[in-house]
Length: 545
Image (cartoon, rainbow, N blue to C red):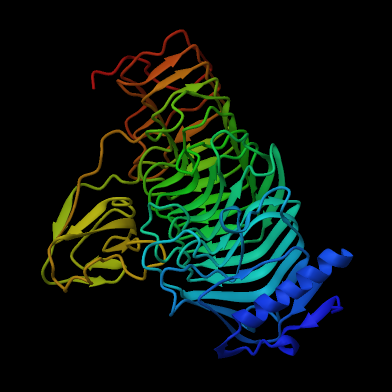
């Protein structure tokens, strides 16, 4: 049977009334068009008019050369559900190595998915299943995914792996990973496995948004430890908010992240670590021109990588713990990071240290950064209850309080047997992080009653612009300014080397470490063999603290 190059879905049996199961008709049409493309080498397009198309109990196995084009988000919607198959994940479309033999020599080519919505709220599996995605395609060549709205899936929303010569643009992924408890694989807004094509994967993600997803907003993840981390991946002009992690590099080489925003995520705005499937952190990446702001814990979490990496020209601000945190997770690469670059960043108003080094660095370059007004978590312990104390799903108000603004940022509030994380505060109100990404409340057992007693812990000790609690060798620190211009000041020192920190063979020149709350520097361990020149520092004596 000859098939035209463009077909109307409703002319081939799809109904789109929100009740009829359209999966069999769509699967039959995809097979027919795939066979036609295989026969004559000419890709086909399915046009799907406005409607709600139910995909029930099984996904559609996709074919090379078949594209799916809707009438727009909110107009064309694919509704996924599995009422009669509770053990079966139901993506809209899938093609995987595990189930369908996908690979470099058996791939999908010349496909486009554009201008529609995927509602995954009807899929509930008996146990969490990483394949319960919105889209689950592997080994795609010359793909284009554009103007998609994917939401409320049980696992990852856009979960496509090994994308070569592919563009992902304008994808909105919201509240995906519903069934992911937060520590399982998958459960992201946009999760892309990498490494299947070898050392280069030419992939661009642009203009995508990830909101309230269970694990990552956007991540790339090396799938096999023995595979070489691939180059060629770019993430630009994207937004990640209210996810566990905003954007993560779990195994790329030379990932470029630019002009993106990572705000109000629960663990870190940007993450490089060994948390991915292969346990391999990214390397050689560049993060530039991004806003990394208001994340509940850290702005940047970085470790489990040999390096290099570069962060240039970013705003890293208002985060609930550290602006930049160098640390290694157990089980991943533990060697010192070589050739880390922190250059021309604005690192300000974070709750504790602006830059915190808890894992080894070799030959880092920390240059031209403005590191100011950190250490905001300076308020003493506080308790209250009774008249004037009120709670909402995401706040506590104590009309009798007089807290310093943001003095409790990042603290753990306890109310009876419940606790919640403070994201910021005014003189009388605490704003609280949702209990998990996508949740509308901070409370696991319901909003506390008015007048309930609460407690906030004390603030920690020194909170410096740059803190070193690990071995740093061969560093270049130049032209940085670490200062505090608030009243009262909260950033205690410009530079602090702790009892566990060591500076060896470093060059520290032309920095301004003055105007902090306590002193310019605090050295619980003396620098060794360092060149110290033309810095505004004050005393360089070893602290008694």
